[in-house]
Length: 66
Image (cartoon, rainbow, N blue to C red; front, side, top):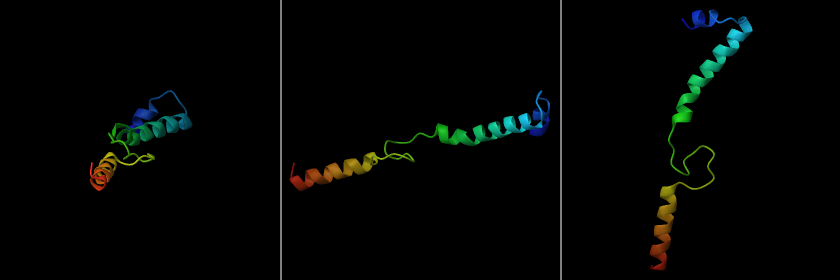
């Protein structure tokens, strides 16, 4: 079905392959784009997750007696 749709495009075989590959890559990227992550939970985040920061703050306050 997908090949039939690409075959109707006014492109050569390499152009159809390019368009097909771009569509498949875009479909595969949708979950990565729509993902809602909390601060610190991302793939390349350098900061700590918010829960860890809060736990460390609470531990510091308990240690200092504040």
